[in-house]
Image (cartoon, rainbow, N blue to C red; front, top):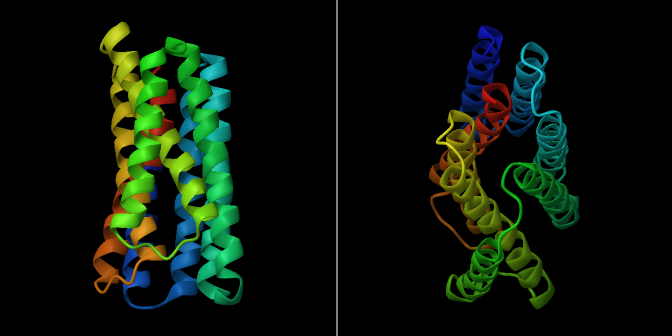
Amino acid sequence: MSPLCYVLAGLTAIFAFCCISLRRKGKSFEGMLFKFLASFAFVSVAIVGYSFSPKETYYFCLVSFALMFGFFGDVLLGIKEIAPKFKSKLIVLGLLFFSLGHICCLCAFVTQVGVHPITLLVGLGGAILAFILASVLKMKVDLKMKLIMSVYYGLLFIKIAMAAEMIHHNEVHPAYITALISCICFLISDTCLGILYFTAVKRKNALVTLELSTYYPAQVLLAMSVALM
């Protein structure tokens, strides 16, 4: 793998740290700018990784689409911080873009392991769990939004199951391990985000820190799985 990938991953970490620090200080606009820089850096990891070792072209293309949808989702949620008037619409649009990214990622995993019924059952279980937790945590969402969130979490759980399947049915490869850790980080990050957006949480700074501290590793590790192929 090219050393430049490590440099770009390091830059992502630096930009993400700046974003978190600025967000904790209430500087939403400056934090948004560093968030965009971090997103650009993790997309670059996959592109540079593939250019130095062009293997698994379909996997690279699909993961790149997933990362780009994540980038656009970041843009939409970043705008939300400086334009709260459109918060509800931007959250839904951001959720849509991230969902498209997860679907592209699932398609990338399919190129490596195919589709197994057990992964779909895990996704169904994750969707039901999310629906129940939305009620338990008393999230301020209507039935439509609760169903959207359930489908979204179903995708996250299918991703985790498929990443584990790649390791189980193939050799224990660094690319598959980073993909699995990435999926778990996504689940943690999006759970924090859901609590932040839809519950009356008091310690917002701690959750914002945890959300961003797991989101960027998730994206970087997904990009690194391309470079490690």
